[in-house]
Length: 110
Image 1: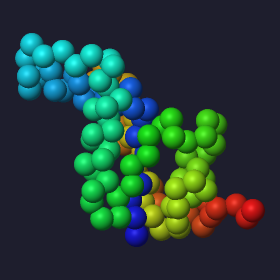
Image 2: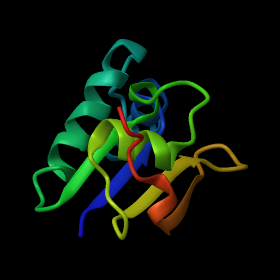
Image 3: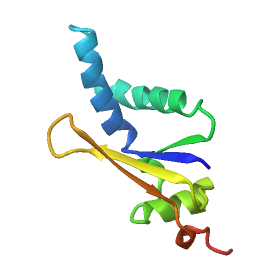
């Protein structure tokens, strides 16, 4: 079985990661122009693991159910785990929601 990480958009994730990096490297500013690249770097590193797929929010069709979009466009299958990561209620906070893809999200017939 595979694990699909559904992350926020590259700029949102990059902004969060840049804020963390600024705690490690005081005085270095990670500009907003670098945020998408930071997010891609994180995603690429995570996706090096076997059966791990990273999908950013802007890579999905707007308004479509995320599970259905992962099945239709990214090959997710019933039983695969989906971990949705998004901004939390407080600044800098992130939240996660884990679930398994069900049979109801099989790709639509052409």
